[in-house]
Image 1 (cartoon, rainbow, N blue to C red):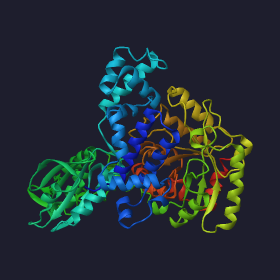
Image 2: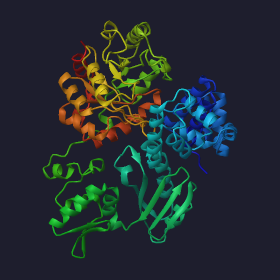
Image 3: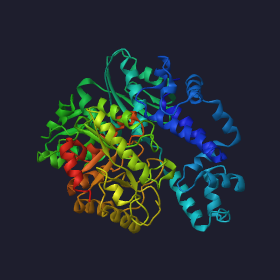
Image 4: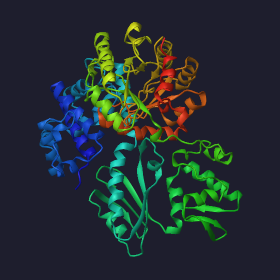
Length: 575
């Protein structure tokens, strides 16, 4: 069975989880975490690299030992190291580690002292008041654990769009090779570029004798066939993703694509509008009485009710139909509109490339400029910079800008917002920079009013340019902290600073709703990769998808400006 990069990264992360619970060497744990991150961020499949006999040790953070494990996983589907760890600690204990507020030390205590192996046992222990008696826990922590465990149990498995993309691309490539298949398209929330995907809808048109439904059920990565018929089949992939394949007639393809793309609320509104025209719209076409009058293309479906084609990312029934009728649909931003990237890291903090390597990679993407924004000293786990190291880096950037011609390197830092709203770097040092990116990296559990006040105070500091990943969420890992983002956006408009849409698919933060709110308030959004290696620039496409869901156009985005115009905007925020 094919092994994808996501499968390898999951194994490395699971090994790191076990090692954390066992209290292993932090550097060893970090090596596995970094390797997992490298693997997930690759633009090519490791199995293809191995087939081409490429040296995996040239990848950032992949030494001989980890390269050997990658070869082992690609060959056997697993790693002996993981098998040994699973013998020592039940896999269910690792699941507990995923709960917010439960680090490896606490999970180890729960496992050894209370013999808690499962989330159900954890919930029961919290309900019985047994956890509060443990050293370092207490009644408040026990209630937080109980709340997190219940929330986790209710959460339906959803895949980050970047993880789903790997399986979608492979499956579509496979289906296109089936004899008789003419068209293949992904629909549903994946096509609408939602940040997470619950399941996947795929449409095909094919010749009458095509074995497409049989071949779909026989796909290597299928773990179970839920149902199979002549026009519809449903399967589970090994990764846990449910996929529904629908075979449609060519004359109905556009109608089916529109219908199964959704959203449900958008489709209901379209069908309601169709009734006003005396029409019926469904997945088979547009009908007047029993006669089909449209449906071969999506455009024909929308034209039947006097609408222009609406981009899939907008189809959430949040005003797109009214905007279309009034001829004021946004001209959505595209990846080609991005002129530079204002948030990235190098090996000076927790990145994997030098400044020069990041600049050269940016040039290959056609960027005019980049901003190096290392972590500040408060984030010690990321080897954050103090004032002395930042000043040294400023000098290095000045030297590089003399050498490099294609890309201008801007001086910045991702400075921590401290608990009281101060920035983790002296003003006299921040004044030497072109821009300041500020982030919350601690005290996520503050009450909503305190957290909001903290961020507003930071925005009022003399040197504050961009609020990075404004809600602090990590998709499927950590919920957003409690903050009044509507108030933050209004304050950004008054202060004249900017908000980031962090394109890392683990974050995609701002969400689409707040992107749209920023647009309405006139606050420019910076779509940044938060790159920790040169390959991470590829993640910008996920940020573009999120921005399009938020109705953002080219002029709504800070880093679509040419360098001279960008610098004018940045200077207004600096002192």
